[in-house]
Amino acid sequence: MPETTPPNLADAGIEIRTYFVRSRHALLARADFGELFVDYYLHLSQHGLSVPAGPDAVFKQALAGFALHCASRPRNEMTAWTVNFQEPLLNLFLAGDNGTGAVTGRVFTENVKEGPEGLFYADVVRGRQPPHRSVVGFQGGDPLAAAEAFYAGSEQRRARYFAVGEEELVLVTEHPDCDLAWLEGLTVEAVRRLEQEETVVPLERRVLRWHCGCNPGRMMEILAPAMRHDPDELFGTEAAIEIRCPRCAGRHAIGRAELAAFVAGRE
Image: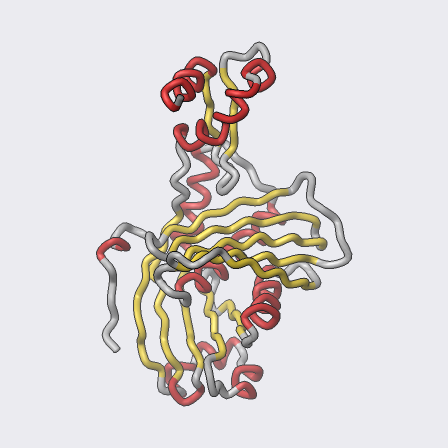
Protein backbone atom coordinates (compact mmCIF):
# COMPACT_ATOMS: atom_id res chain seq x y z
CA MET A 1 0.00 0.00 0.00
CA PRO A 2 1.51 3.41 -0.90
CA GLU A 3 2.31 5.87 1.83
CA THR A 4 0.14 8.98 1.81
CA THR A 5 0.29 12.43 3.36
CA PRO A 6 -3.00 14.37 3.22
CA PRO A 7 -2.53 18.05 2.28
CA ASN A 8 -4.22 19.30 5.46
CA LEU A 9 -1.52 17.63 7.56
CA ALA A 10 1.36 19.29 5.75
CA ASP A 11 2.18 21.64 8.65
CA ALA A 12 5.39 21.09 10.59
CA GLY A 13 5.17 18.40 13.23
CA ILE A 14 6.43 14.96 14.10
CA GLU A 15 6.14 12.07 11.68
CA ILE A 16 4.40 8.91 12.85
CA ARG A 17 4.68 5.87 10.62
CA THR A 18 2.45 2.81 10.79
CA TYR A 19 3.22 -0.67 9.51
CA PHE A 20 1.50 -4.04 9.29
CA VAL A 21 3.47 -7.02 10.58
CA ARG A 22 2.17 -9.41 7.98
CA SER A 23 2.92 -12.85 9.39
CA ARG A 24 1.89 -11.82 12.91
CA HIS A 25 -1.27 -9.82 12.04
CA ALA A 26 -0.32 -6.84 14.17
CA LEU A 27 -0.16 -3.08 13.60
CA LEU A 28 2.99 -1.19 14.53
CA ALA A 29 3.22 2.58 15.03
CA ARG A 30 6.46 4.39 15.83
CA ALA A 31 7.85 7.90 16.18
CA ASP A 32 10.55 10.01 17.76
CA PHE A 33 8.83 12.52 20.03
CA GLY A 34 11.69 14.95 20.63
CA GLU A 35 10.21 17.77 18.55
CA LEU A 36 6.73 17.32 20.05
CA PHE A 37 8.20 17.60 23.55
CA VAL A 38 10.00 20.80 22.51
CA ASP A 39 6.69 22.27 21.31
CA TYR A 40 5.06 21.26 24.60
CA TYR A 41 7.77 23.07 26.57
CA LEU A 42 7.48 26.12 24.31
CA HIS A 43 3.76 26.16 25.12
CA LEU A 44 4.49 26.07 28.85
CA SER A 45 7.01 28.90 28.48
CA GLN A 46 4.70 31.03 26.35
CA HIS A 47 1.93 30.86 28.96
CA GLY A 48 4.14 31.07 32.03
CA LEU A 49 3.22 27.56 33.15
CA SER A 50 5.25 25.21 35.32
CA VAL A 51 4.72 21.49 35.85
CA PRO A 52 6.56 19.60 38.64
CA ALA A 53 9.21 17.16 37.41
CA GLY A 54 7.33 13.99 38.37
CA PRO A 55 3.97 14.84 36.75
CA ASP A 56 5.85 16.34 33.78
CA ALA A 57 7.59 13.01 33.08
CA VAL A 58 4.29 11.14 33.37
CA PHE A 59 2.61 13.60 30.99
CA LYS A 60 5.33 13.27 28.35
CA GLN A 61 5.01 9.48 28.36
CA ALA A 62 1.23 9.74 28.13
CA LEU A 63 1.44 12.31 25.32
CA ALA A 64 3.68 10.01 23.25
CA GLY A 65 1.45 7.00 23.88
CA PHE A 66 -1.65 9.00 23.02
CA ALA A 67 -0.14 10.31 19.77
CA LEU A 68 0.68 6.75 18.63
CA HIS A 69 -2.86 5.70 19.49
CA CYS A 70 -4.30 8.59 17.45
CA ALA A 71 -2.12 7.76 14.45
CA SER A 72 -3.45 4.20 14.56
CA ARG A 73 -7.07 5.32 14.42
CA PRO A 74 -9.38 6.47 11.55
CA ARG A 75 -8.76 9.93 10.12
CA ASN A 76 -12.26 11.20 10.95
CA GLU A 77 -11.87 10.52 14.66
CA MET A 78 -11.43 12.91 17.58
CA THR A 79 -10.26 11.40 20.85
CA ALA A 80 -9.79 12.58 24.43
CA TRP A 81 -8.21 10.70 27.30
CA THR A 82 -8.69 11.71 30.92
CA VAL A 83 -6.48 9.64 33.21
CA ASN A 84 -6.85 9.72 36.99
CA PHE A 85 -3.77 8.39 38.80
CA GLN A 86 -3.77 7.45 42.46
CA GLU A 87 0.01 6.79 42.57
CA PRO A 88 0.95 9.65 42.41
CA LEU A 89 -2.30 11.59 42.83
CA LEU A 90 -2.81 13.54 39.60
CA ASN A 91 -4.99 13.81 36.49
CA LEU A 92 -3.92 14.05 32.88
CA PHE A 93 -6.01 15.29 29.98
CA LEU A 94 -5.11 14.65 26.33
CA ALA A 95 -7.03 15.54 23.18
CA GLY A 96 -6.37 14.76 19.55
CA ASP A 97 -8.04 15.54 16.23
CA ASN A 98 -7.01 13.17 13.45
CA GLY A 99 -8.59 15.47 10.87
CA THR A 100 -6.07 18.22 11.57
CA GLY A 101 -3.25 16.24 13.17
CA ALA A 102 -3.44 18.33 16.36
CA VAL A 103 -2.72 17.00 19.86
CA THR A 104 -2.76 18.88 23.14
CA GLY A 105 -3.22 18.31 26.85
CA ARG A 106 -2.47 19.35 30.39
CA VAL A 107 -1.69 18.17 33.93
CA PHE A 108 -3.91 18.63 36.99
CA THR A 109 -2.21 18.33 40.38
CA GLU A 110 -4.87 20.06 42.53
CA ASN A 111 -8.33 18.88 43.61
CA VAL A 112 -7.68 15.38 42.26
CA LYS A 113 -10.27 12.82 43.33
CA GLU A 114 -8.98 9.96 45.48
CA GLY A 115 -10.25 6.44 44.95
CA PRO A 116 -9.39 2.74 45.25
CA GLU A 117 -7.82 2.59 41.76
CA GLY A 118 -6.88 4.75 38.82
CA LEU A 119 -9.53 5.46 36.19
CA PHE A 120 -8.97 5.79 32.46
CA TYR A 121 -11.70 7.67 30.55
CA ALA A 122 -11.71 7.62 26.74
CA ASP A 123 -14.09 9.85 24.77
CA VAL A 124 -14.37 9.33 21.02
CA VAL A 125 -16.27 11.13 18.28
CA ARG A 126 -16.06 9.62 14.80
CA GLY A 127 -17.55 11.60 11.94
CA ARG A 128 -21.22 12.30 12.64
CA GLN A 129 -21.68 9.37 14.98
CA PRO A 130 -22.77 10.03 18.59
CA PRO A 131 -19.98 10.49 21.14
CA HIS A 132 -18.83 7.34 22.90
CA ARG A 133 -17.23 7.08 26.36
CA SER A 134 -15.54 4.12 28.00
CA VAL A 135 -14.06 3.84 31.49
CA VAL A 136 -11.45 1.32 32.62
CA GLY A 137 -9.79 0.90 36.00
CA PHE A 138 -6.06 0.34 36.44
CA GLN A 139 -3.35 0.20 39.10
CA GLY A 140 -0.08 2.09 39.45
CA GLY A 141 1.35 5.27 38.03
CA ASP A 142 2.66 4.18 34.61
CA PRO A 143 0.66 5.96 31.86
CA LEU A 144 1.64 3.42 29.20
CA ALA A 145 0.51 0.52 31.41
CA ALA A 146 -2.75 2.44 31.96
CA ALA A 147 -3.17 2.78 28.17
CA GLU A 148 -2.54 -0.96 27.75
CA ALA A 149 -5.25 -1.61 30.37
CA PHE A 150 -7.58 0.63 28.35
CA TYR A 151 -6.92 -1.41 25.20
CA ALA A 152 -7.56 -4.69 27.03
CA GLY A 153 -10.66 -3.52 28.88
CA SER A 154 -12.32 -1.21 26.36
CA GLU A 155 -10.90 -2.01 22.92
CA GLN A 156 -10.95 -5.73 23.77
CA ARG A 157 -7.57 -6.30 22.14
CA ARG A 158 -3.96 -6.43 23.27
CA ALA A 159 -1.61 -3.50 22.89
CA ARG A 160 1.97 -3.06 24.05
CA TYR A 161 4.21 0.01 24.24
CA PHE A 162 8.00 -0.10 23.96
CA ALA A 163 10.55 2.65 24.61
CA VAL A 164 13.16 1.84 21.96
CA GLY A 165 15.15 5.08 22.23
CA GLU A 166 15.55 8.09 24.48
CA GLU A 167 12.47 9.76 22.97
CA GLU A 168 11.31 7.07 20.52
CA LEU A 169 8.26 4.98 21.31
CA VAL A 170 6.63 2.03 19.53
CA LEU A 171 3.05 0.77 19.84
CA VAL A 172 2.17 -2.76 18.69
CA THR A 173 -1.54 -3.63 18.62
CA GLU A 174 -3.47 -6.82 18.05
CA HIS A 175 -5.44 -7.24 14.81
CA PRO A 176 -7.71 -10.17 13.81
CA ASP A 177 -5.84 -13.50 13.82
CA CYS A 178 -2.90 -11.93 15.66
CA ASP A 179 -0.19 -14.22 16.95
CA LEU A 180 -0.84 -13.39 20.60
CA ALA A 181 1.97 -15.56 21.94
CA TRP A 182 4.41 -13.60 19.79
CA LEU A 183 2.89 -10.28 20.89
CA GLU A 184 3.01 -11.22 24.57
CA GLY A 185 6.62 -12.35 24.22
CA LEU A 186 7.94 -9.23 22.53
CA THR A 187 10.87 -7.45 24.17
CA VAL A 188 12.47 -4.09 23.48
CA GLU A 189 15.34 -5.77 21.65
CA ALA A 190 12.92 -7.85 19.56
CA VAL A 191 11.02 -4.70 18.56
CA ARG A 192 14.28 -3.03 17.53
CA ARG A 193 15.02 -6.00 15.23
CA LEU A 194 11.46 -6.34 13.96
CA GLU A 195 12.04 -5.02 10.45
CA GLN A 196 14.99 -7.39 10.00
CA GLU A 197 13.21 -10.50 11.28
CA GLU A 198 9.58 -10.02 10.15
CA THR A 199 7.72 -9.01 7.00
CA VAL A 200 6.81 -5.41 7.86
CA VAL A 201 4.66 -3.58 5.30
CA PRO A 202 4.52 0.26 5.40
CA LEU A 203 0.95 1.58 5.66
CA GLU A 204 1.00 5.36 5.98
CA ARG A 205 2.72 8.42 7.32
CA ARG A 206 0.95 10.98 9.48
CA VAL A 207 2.14 14.29 10.84
CA LEU A 208 1.01 15.33 14.31
CA ARG A 209 1.77 18.62 16.01
CA TRP A 210 1.11 20.32 19.33
CA HIS A 211 -1.87 22.62 18.82
CA CYS A 212 -4.90 23.55 20.91
CA GLY A 213 -6.55 26.40 19.03
CA CYS A 214 -7.67 28.24 22.15
CA ASN A 215 -7.81 32.04 21.91
CA PRO A 216 -9.49 34.97 23.74
CA GLY A 217 -12.60 34.63 21.56
CA ARG A 218 -13.16 31.05 22.60
CA MET A 219 -12.53 31.89 26.22
CA MET A 220 -15.12 34.68 26.04
CA GLU A 221 -17.65 32.14 24.74
CA ILE A 222 -17.03 30.14 27.93
CA LEU A 223 -17.43 33.23 30.15
CA ALA A 224 -20.44 34.72 28.33
CA PRO A 225 -23.16 32.92 30.38
CA ALA A 226 -21.59 34.05 33.68
CA MET A 227 -21.26 37.60 32.31
CA ARG A 228 -24.93 37.69 31.40
CA HIS A 229 -25.93 36.31 34.80
CA ASP A 230 -23.82 38.49 37.12
CA PRO A 231 -20.90 40.58 35.78
CA ASP A 232 -20.02 41.86 39.27
CA GLU A 233 -19.67 38.34 40.65
CA LEU A 234 -17.47 37.38 37.70
CA PHE A 235 -15.13 40.39 37.79
CA GLY A 236 -15.59 41.87 41.27
CA THR A 237 -13.63 45.13 41.28
CA GLU A 238 -11.16 43.97 38.62
CA ALA A 239 -11.05 45.36 35.12
CA ALA A 240 -9.79 42.03 33.78
CA ILE A 241 -9.59 38.39 34.85
CA GLU A 242 -7.46 35.45 33.79
CA ILE A 243 -8.98 32.26 32.48
CA ARG A 244 -7.13 29.06 31.70
CA CYS A 245 -7.97 26.87 28.75
CA PRO A 246 -9.51 23.63 30.03
CA ARG A 247 -7.66 21.67 27.31
CA CYS A 248 -4.09 23.00 27.46
CA ALA A 249 -4.02 25.30 30.54
CA GLY A 250 -3.10 28.28 28.35
CA ARG A 251 -3.54 31.63 30.14
CA HIS A 252 -5.85 34.26 28.61
CA ALA A 253 -6.56 37.72 30.07
CA ILE A 254 -10.14 38.87 29.43
CA GLY A 255 -11.14 42.50 30.06
CA ARG A 256 -14.54 43.37 31.47
CA ALA A 257 -15.30 45.94 28.78
CA GLU A 258 -14.09 43.54 26.11
CA LEU A 259 -16.34 40.75 27.38
CA ALA A 260 -19.33 43.10 27.76
CA ALA A 261 -18.94 44.13 24.12
CA PHE A 262 -18.64 40.49 23.07
CA VAL A 263 -21.85 39.55 24.91
CA ALA A 264 -23.72 42.58 23.57
CA GLY A 265 -22.74 41.61 20.04
CA ARG A 266 -24.32 38.19 20.57
CA GLU A 267 -27.67 39.53 21.82
